[in-house]
Image 1 (cartoon, rainbow, N blue to C red):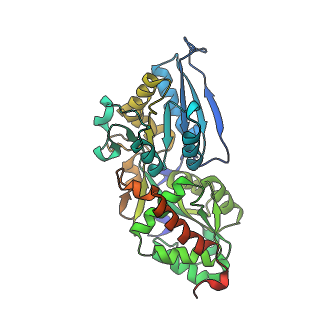
Image 2 (cartoon, rainbow, N blue to C red):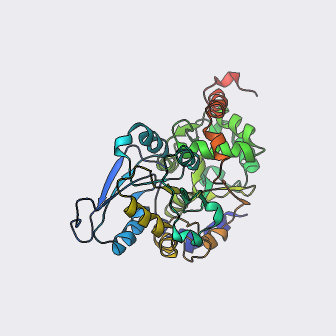
Image 3 (cartoon, rainbow, N blue to C red):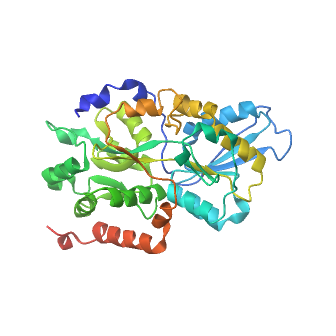
Length: 367
């Protein structure tokens, strides 16, 4: 489809709030109770997440309107660090974990770290969005490609992975050191989406070879990648979270965001309550809000994050998302198959393949 198709759907794009998969280091934000001080010292809900605090804040505020005595302490981090911190620091675990790294979240739940909770609000979300009443998907987000269109003078934007490969071949050395990817060894979301590409895409191997041959730059977070795109340090960024990239496309007209037309990967941000949560009752109330029609409505209208519910309406709803040019939506399933990605042997195989392509000497790559 033409670039103009992307530009014509303003409602969904105009006010997309900025959020990223990762931040360079932990960021702690306190949301004091609406009653200024918690009624009891224990009225504090601790949440760890890989969601920008500005995007998730409307949901926190909605929670506090229902429970004005509760303060929320939010620690924002990247997906890989979030997982590793949870494993390595058992004495300071949160009451709720939020992350788009579905495989890492699933592994924690499957390994017995999640508290089972039969929320009465599960009726509001699709059956495939939760697992064993322990892990709850609450968003529906596309993985996209972003391109600095200044390099495409007179050309059309590549709408599919095959067209992206053709662009790379045509531009050749112009793209040396000018493409950006998640470092899959440092980003949990980057690893998940890349591994899923390996299962779904016939062009996976050729893309990997092309990125390696042209010395693609590696990043640990979406924000850094898009900043590099803005500054002209890279011209193409591959496998980004859609809402963040669309926001930049509105701010900077030369950054174009594309949902690939061969298929568009969909990820879910997931939540669970740790078994050793200090505030399980407060945490259950948060899960209830997250899955409720009210909470999903907040996401669809205030957060910039597309909610999992198909019933709610708003500028960030699934209905509005479906109006944008896209391929077949292929959600990553929330099920036991995710454990394949966390298996050490499988992971090392993917890392080995990745390292051979990304860190090989240029004259050792096939021509």
